[in-house]
Length: 493
Image (cartoon, rainbow, N blue to C red):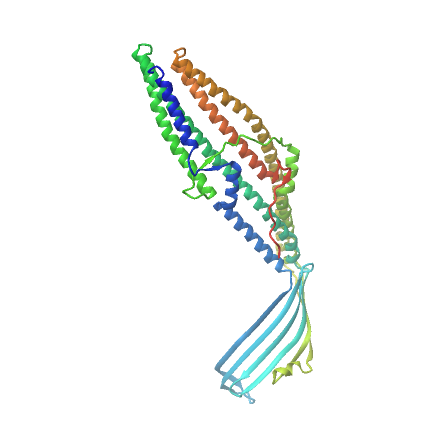
């Protein structure tokens, strides 16, 4: 019985560890995809991304509203004044008279911008009332209807340029939202595997402690029988102490990683969870040409490049329009009348017309117009060169990520086989050591290789899945489903 005691102790310790790690009541089992879904749904970063998207949506609605008819009501109710005012008399002298008056005006205007020309047409109705309290007089003046036009001539047309640029900006924001969600997936994957590796180290440390303690018990018996040297016995005792320290550190690392993941995905503090090792990987091999084509089609970069080029062109147009010959046309046609009663305004009103053309033309500006225009043109060239470099960098990033994805995918089978071989080799080495056929040094080498192989396998899974979601982020394309990654478009105004 004494001879089999070490083996019984090893079995009991290992069984207790397995029961403790597996049979925890109320523990929620989480896969990598579930963790990503939680992070994209309820993490603080996801809420920030959603808020940013809503912000861009309301900005877009504000921009669109500028091109639609505007109805406004303006007025002054009241404008009362009681004061002593100098009044010129018929003989040319001035006397100071008390004056108590009130002016009230109200206007309703319907306007519509003309984006191709940058002008505006409007229809307005105005009414004014004047009260002289000292003389007990009331007068009305009004314009029942006025049709007018305001039209800049030869000036920079911001309405036309914004109508080209702002839709691209909104579309870019929608693409950015999808990219941000995929960025959350990449970060959640990193935290997931940080915890998974910490738990693997925790499991390795617990098993190593149990194994080293058992081996130390066996070594003590051998030492007492004179079959083991004092040096080997002390080395095994030192291994037990180091294993105990390693387990304590592994427990701390696992708690820290679990807290980081819990906080990021928004799990409650009392929710217990454990992670699955995502050993099943996609079978799809990604073609570089497909990934690059999808990235150019789905990512915001192509839209961003077009928007920035349009903005550079608009700055040139602004430099030329604001600094050269400018003119503006203002014209109105309507009805007007006045009377002692409000109804008098609408009783046979008279015609009212107004037309005005104003202009500005620089004669001597010491080269200012030419300088401003030249700066805008050079800025456009700088934008072109910058975009060209960014396009090259973007394509290189996509191609590099594809190569990394395919390489890491093929490496997983190798690390998985190495993990299985190292674990089996350690079991053989341990049993061989127990019968005294190998040294403690050879056993420690087998132990170190087993631990290293297990960590390398978890690390290879981590690198692959991070590369997988990074590639999705770079292309906004789901290579498993063979379709672009899209989200529901918000309802437009």
